[in-house]
Structures are given as structure tokens and as C-alpha cells.
Amino acid sequence: MRKYIHIAIIALVLISTKTHAQDFLYDEAYKSIDAMLKGEKPYSFKNAVFEVENAYKQGLLDTTYYSLAIKTIAHLTKSVMQSRTLKDYDYSDRKEVEKYAALYTVMKDSITINFKDGQSKWTAFTYDFNDIWGDDDWSNMFVSKLLDTHKGNCHSLPYLYKILAEEIGAEAHLALAPNHVYIKHRNQKDGWYNTELTSGYFPIDAWIMASGYVHLDGIRNGLYMKALNNKESLALLLVDLAQGFDKRFPENDGSFTLRCVDKALEYYPNYINALLLRLETKKKQLQEYAKSKDKEINEIMDDQDGKVAWIDLNHQVRNIHELGYRQMPKEMYLDWLVTLKEEQEKYTNKKITTFNKQN
Image 1 (spheres, rainbow, N blue to C red):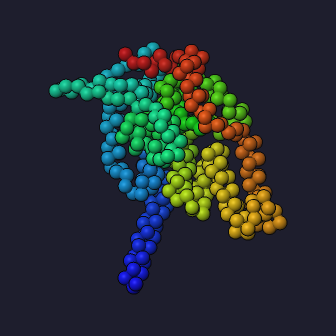
Image 2: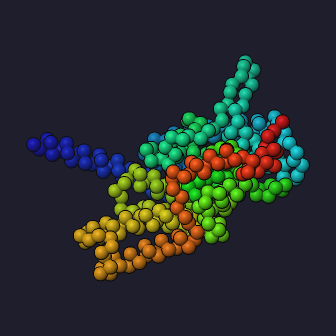
């Protein structure tokens, strides 16, 4: 009997140690991103992305391998820049625009690579219609998965693009639409323009508005279509970190999630996914509180703490709506993406498409 007790104790210790190690990875990823935000550590979107993914992977992500993969693709991008010229672009920022064009080519085109003893074919990164929300496997949202398979989604594709841009010394801004992330660039000829990596087109803003879920208040308040700076991009990663934590530890008390969300909102106050995750987490906490009182969530108004939490919850809902958020049903998302391909003439920025086609 004593033998079995000892075995049980050892098992509990091992489980506890493993859980603590996983918590540690999330805490370390949070601290690293926080240090970047504060300027206490050099900014690196790539490093931050891989730290977030490694936390979910329980420390098993081979960051050295994936960093080398990034360097290899960056080298290919520079080779494309050297071997091709832009079409009809004669402005002082030509060198910068060449970087954008080369990045787009590497991300969305197949390329024949010549060697002394033969040729190799570079395969473009494409959209993966399988598990686009990461519901079955959260790692389907990861850049590392994209690098392994050359298939990704509107989360991993723009993240990789931004990583590669920074690797070759180019500037790329993440931007948000409902349930979606894309890239914004700026050049002297055309000003701001959009790069859509799921389809490989350059949509005008009207396409984003055509989703039907972009309220003008949402644009004015920076929920959507804003060119995010680097700190705001790191805020996105803090929410990714929190979502991964919730996936890994579904029974958590919400404290780590709120820690990430609050820090994200400190640097991107109207980041809609952070606001929604905070609302969802606070609601779960209130449900647990009501459960501890043997009540339903709508029966706690006679409890002072519960009443305060309920009022705060409703205030958050009202604030999110006033900012311009309108929920886009998941089933409508793919329909909206397809419209860009089906209605190219209507929604594609033809000038940008032309000069990104290289000779």
C-alpha cells in the first residue's frame, strides 16, 4: 500500500513540475514582449512570435531551425531584388519598393532557382482552408507551421511577411479587418496601399468595407484598417499568447489572460481582439463567482461584488459597440475572402499589381 502511495505522490509531483514549467514558458514569453515594449530589450517581431509559439509548444519549438529558415528566405528575397527590376516606378523610394515587390514575389510566386549543377523550384505560400481558426489545433495559426508546410492563414501569412520585411530591412505594417490581418505599405507614388496575402491581390479599402462589418466608427477609432506600429504589433502577440494559454489550460482562472490583455491595451487601447478577450474572460470569472454562490449570472445583483462585476461587464459591452465593433459570423468570412478573387476588377488596386510584377 505504501508503495502505491509513493508512486502516486511522485506522479503528482511530476505533473505539478510539468505544469509549472509550462506556466514558466508563458511567463517568460510575456516578460520578453513586455521588455521589448518598454525598450529594455531590442525589438524583434520574429523573436516575439517564436517565443509565443514555443510557449504553446511547451518548449519544444526548434527556434534555431526556424530562425535559419527565415534567414534562408530573406537571402532568396534579396536575390530576387538583385535579379529583377521594377516596372514603371521612378521615385526616390525605389529601393524600398523593390523590397516590397521582392517580398511579394517570394511569398506568392513560384520561383525557379538556378544552381551550378541544376535547378530547384521555390514553392509559394498558399492559403490553408483547413482549420482556419485553430479550433482543432491552435498551432495551425503558427508561422512555424507555415514554414513547414507553405500553407497558412490570415494570421501566419502576414506575420511571416512582417518578419521577412524586418529581416531585409524593409518596413511593413500589420493592419486589421474583421477576423482578419493584412499588410499595409506606403510609397511615394500611390501613398498607402494594401497587400492581401491570403489571395495574393492588392485590394482597395472598398473591399474591406464590403465585408459589411466595418463600421465608420471602427475605422475612426482604430479598430480596423489602421497601419499598426511595432508596439501595436507586439500587442497582437500578447493576445495570441493569452489565447494559446487558454487553449493549453482551459480551466485557468483568467488572471494570466487578463495580464496579457491589459498590457496589450496599454499599447493599443482599442485593439478589438484584446477588448473582446477581456470581456469573455471577465464573463467567465463572473460565471464562476455566481456558481460559487449557487446562483445564475443574472441573479447576483443583490451581491455587492457581483453587482459591481455585472455593471462593469455591461459597460465593456457598451464600449465595444460604441467603438464600432460589429460581429462578423465565421461562416461569412470565407465568402468575403472569395469576393476579392471573384470581383478582381471591382476591388483590386491595378496600379499596385502592375508595378509589383517584375521583369
